[in-house]
Image (cartoon, rainbow, N blue to C red; front, top):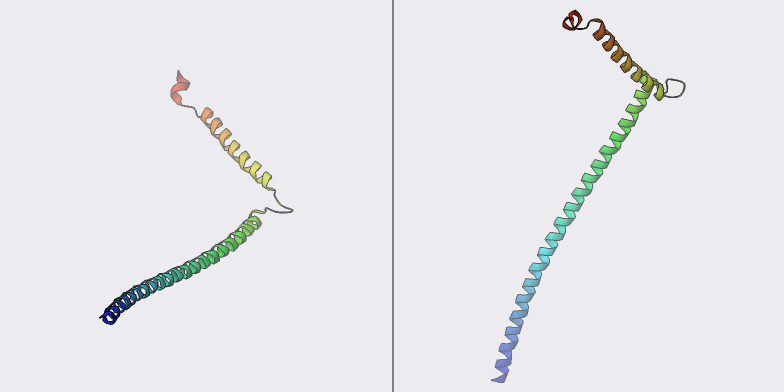
Length: 116
C-alpha cells in the first residue's frame, strides 16, 4: 500500500511539474513575442531617424546654397557693398519717405485749419 501511495504522490508531483512547465513555456513565448515587437519597433524608429537625418542634411545643404546665391545676387561679400552699408541705405530710405510724407502733409494741409 505504501508503494501505491508513493506512486500517486509522484504522479501528482509529476503532473504539477508538467503544468508549471507548460505555464513557463507560455510565459517564454509571450516574452519572445514582446521582444520581437520591441525589436521591430526599434528598427522602424531607426529607419525614421535615418530618413529625418537625411532630410535635414539636404535641407541644410539647400539653405547654404540659397544663402550663397542671395549673397551673390545682392552683392554682399568681398569687394562689394558691405552689410552695414545696406542697412544704412534702408534706414535712409525710410527717413526720406517719412520726411516726404511730413512735407507733403504740411504743404497740402487740411483746408479747414488754413481758413480759420
